[in-house]
Length: 543
Image (tube, rainbow, N blue to C red; front, side):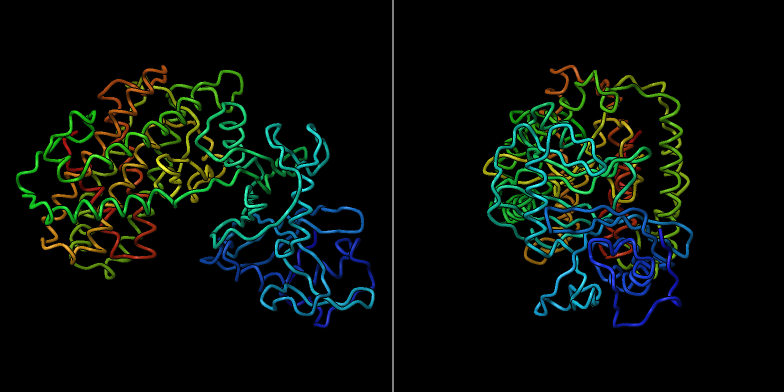
């Protein structure tokens, strides 16, 4: 539908003699709405992902009504085209209101419709809209075959609307808390395929009964012949004490504080090979005395929940989207193309931003560039013929920030996958150890960010803290591995023999660290030392 250039727009005030119920069919309105008005509004939104590109024009791909009796809202599916010759799709629900006290910042367009003055606003700002969406989900029939499909879980019985509020500041989506028991997540950036978060939530909690993820309660999808777009996902609101990232930062800070408090001699701490599988009894008493038992017990619980997620994802033999598969040549080609493209991108970023680095970051940045051929060779050396393990659907962006802490347990969430990946790439079956590698990189981050943020509070040099941190890191990995590997093998999920596991972990951790490097170089260059340190420690490990 109507593509509008900036020079064709009518000037305010916008006046139309078309009723709101049919306004989207008015070509004059869509032309005015899509150009300057929406362009100026959309670029200011937190969820807009095109801030680093130059917007060319916005096209209205589709729209649908969300209505009940006289209440009419529109769901817009927008295509944002960029000067750089690519596009992104977004979902924007809109409403017309005549309330003059409505926050000016939230008004998209002032206009007069059939002599009624008012504003177009993002409908999510209106409680009436949020109530309507909730009611459409809970009253939906099991097999909705309309273009806009509302779905409710058979296990969801909370049907009366009481209240709603915004969850808080989010980057890419907008989440609404309903009745303090449910969350409806509206996906702002949309794709012409089912969102992985919706697919995985439905599969894990509805089909497999996995308890340590927010229970699936309902969804809204827009379905036509050539696409199935997820615009909203409703899940249980899990009461929690924050995420595992904040939890781990507190724990690691305590561990570093114990160095002085317990008079620990860092040079006398026993070390362990990386990726060794350890039970609690295998952790030397000096390490337990230093770090405490509790953090290792918690890591065992986290490893158990991670293993249970992968066991559920690897136990399907009916739905081809979730059936385990083996490594093959197609996967190898896909993987190498993707990684080599990403690696080249990171090389360019580092080369262009070396002037922003200093100290250890600068030294490691130089080493990264000097050893680029060695790192590239590591990526090229992926040989699927030597691998016997299975590939399954995985979380795909698994780190401590995607895990909630509830009492003494952990809940896993946000299955959308890596933000930089295409929707197709996010659904490729991968070794489950890729998720494990993501958590291990997150442990590394927690340790190093503690040193960078609180190093001056500890009476040790940065080098001594790095040494202690690397020792701690290996025991974190070892205890996690001990529980994780034991459990997945017990349930016959094939993650390969010992050498294969170590190869895949190193490969995936190298990939993850290179991925992280792009983010850090662009947004906080001094933190680039963390992924650079991760890259070099993997490269320096014997093959």
